[in-house]
Length: 93
Image 1 (cartoon, rainbow, N blue to C red):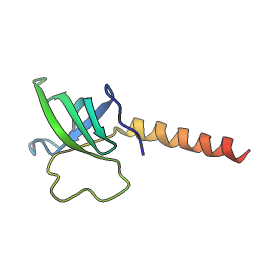
Image 2: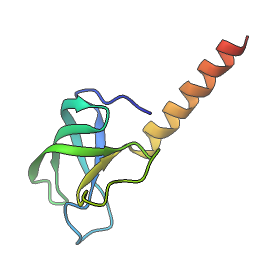
Image 3: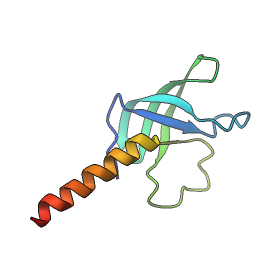
Image 4: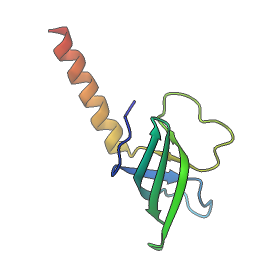
């Protein structure tokens, strides 16, 4: 699991069903590891905000009530996986 922190970039899904591409947003407040506030931009560059947004960490099914959610970008997931593997390797030595 990636711990969210203020300033990290997330993708927003479900805010509009007119595009299959995510919207980019910055975490502006962290409630806990699965709940954040964000400020972002739509496909036209217009700003939006979403408060108390579910952050899908990919390790459990997303609640059905979540029509709009945030998720980590693939790059961030890859970096977290590399870090975890390195930490395991170091702990094993």
